[in-house]
Length: 226
Length: 78
Image (cartoon, rainbow over all chains, first blue to last red; front, side):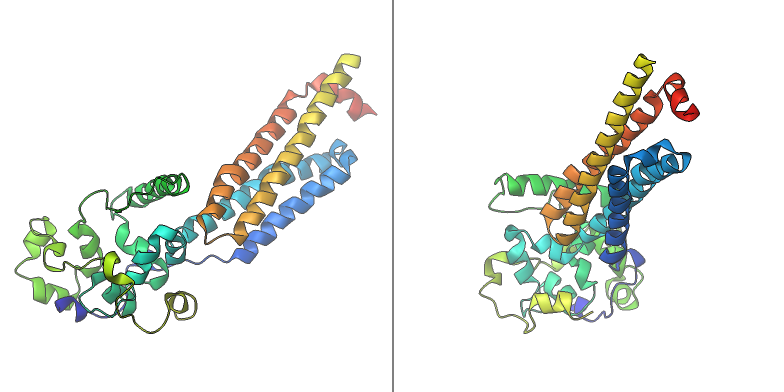
């Protein structure tokens, strides 16, 4: 298969996982809590001008900063592979990343590090459009609702056919890719032919559990290896 | 005088409620940081943490602007 010839992680910056540290956010939240507790325990403070300034800090500046930092952290964590695979229904998709089958697109990308493993699902399943990230997050909220209300369909399908745009976001401009696909590029760009027409094996969820796997566990790949 | 004191008391009550709401929201946010890799952590943060903090901040501003100057005057001169 031609796509095995390309190597290296996709160089696009927004494909690289941004792991914000939990500790600074926790410290900021605890600082906010501490000032609020101080105002609860010493209510007379509020009657002085300094106390009022402290109230503005305690009830506006620090909480808003804490929520903003917490939102950033949660937002970035929703892009992680671990987050996606924490839902039971996604387990077979996680297993399909580890099958020892070179023709499997997700497995080839994941195992060879062509995408950042920590944000693997999001890298391929977001739309590279102006509101692609936002749509992915809104869809994610729908998924949470469907999952926790027990309405998960037996067969999970994409909302729309997979677009070449998502593949070309990384592959376009790569020498080996363009040399191999030079004749097809106009049609690939215009979606005249689909990448998936030739590269047909996406997530083989039905056969993933029984298939031979690459030796390291997915947890090891996500937590230990870069 | 008594009307002013009553208004001030109401504003203070709002203020202390805003403290409690914001504190509760921050406690939820802190708890949600432990479940960062799980959808429930995100849900707790978004649905409860953010809502409580937002209510607390709004109530704080209401308590600030609800205090008529006349009600504050005795406190300033005391």
